[in-house]
Image (tube, rainbow, N blue to C red):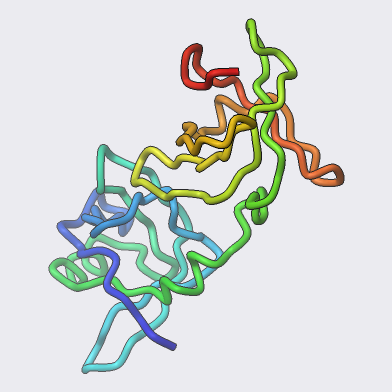
Length: 171
């Protein structure tokens, strides 16, 4: 199991074992609460499950780990690296599956229900994921992909309808 450092314990938070973590190169909201994180003790990775995680700005979060219930427990972890089997976490299904090959439609507004093209890639830009779309006229464009822009998802027909900002596509 290849572990990657995902965070560092910056300080304790409160008296109930809370920890302030500084995350490296990932959004704290991407962390799966169903997979353990690891902290090394005597050179061996010890698994901990996250019981709660509250993001605190960019790259930080207050985390409660199972079995870390007191200020004293939390203080022992300050300065420690937090590791995770990040490859496994990245491969988890986010509920949208593989959108490559799906048909993208423009929804809401002047372009309602117009076929925009076919999704050729999902570009994971931190805090700004985009779909690469080959439009009907053969050009390739990046379309912002955020849950607030989703109008409908039809997995059976492999169709995604997004509220696409005006002027982004020449339809």
